[in-house]
Amino acid sequence: MATLKPMPAATKISAPFWQALKENKLKIQQCNSCDGWIFFPRNHCSHCLAHDLDWKQVNGDGILYSYTLARIPTMPEFSDEMPQALAVVELAQGVRINTTLIDVAEEDIKIGMAVKPVFDKVTSDGETLLRFTAVNNAGGVSDYVDPLEGLERNESGQVQVPVSNLAALYALADNKFTGWSNTVVVDQELINAFAELSGDDYWLHTDPERAKVESPFKTTIAHGSLVQVLQSRLTIGLPFEITGFKTMVNYGSNRLRFPAPVPASSTIHGRSKVKDISMSHKGVQLTLEMNIHVLGNDKPSVINDLVILYR
Image 1: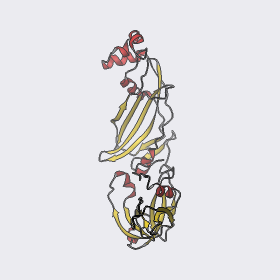
Image 2 (image 1 turned 45 degrees about the horizontal axis):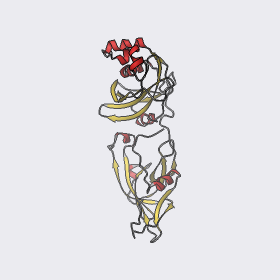
Image 3 (image 1 turned 180 degrees about the vertical axis):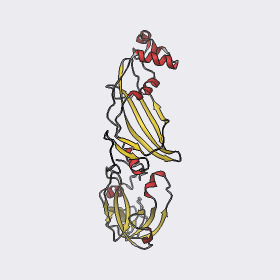
Image 4 (image 1 turned 45 degrees about the vertical axis):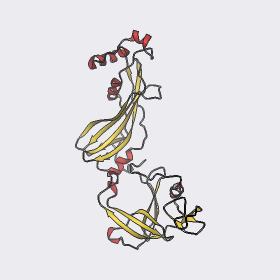
């Protein structure tokens, strides 16, 4: 599973720090010229300006230098962590690290209290954030917990995700496609019916004889909008069911593209994935990327980022 919370972007300079966290180690830089410790990561010593730094592992023991409790999330994605104890920890080496304090009751948080590191696994592929906790707590590694684990399933085997369970909702956006749907044949009769309904009777869609001669596809092709509409005939086995909402509406499309043609008499099928979950005053917006392909073609004929609004 992935997380929709913004994650730190490792740079060439900071990459060793983030890689060490994935290995459950805390490494900071030390200057070989003056022995000074440096944080945040940089190319030169902040004490003597020498460009001779090495990454050294430290145990992470420190004290709470400063903190503040955030009770209103700066982004909706952090709603499940409120209140956040945003902290500055001073390590035994003298450097200060911006972090969060976890597993400590509000009334027990004191400036100067002894703390130790927690290597918090926030994704299933091992992405790790450095947090701190009170020295008497367990510390160490906080393993990733799948927010979908333990949720009930319906008769179809879909995991039931309450619209109020933000962590589970975010976990749905794992960038994984479903399996393929059933198939639908897009024949000339269907194309003609859509042309009559829509008024788009351009020869490229409706005149097979002319298309054989003049079309680069040597046949008529379906309207892009027709193929999009046909997604309603495709039964896609979503692995989840959103529950606990009052209303659900099709809010439109963030993106709609027709990358490849659908020649007449083609067979199409589709698949989808959850691309994004977002919160706003309007409710929970789930963006479902729908891809429709001609059977056997790797390139999709329709890419539709469908937005569904739950309230």
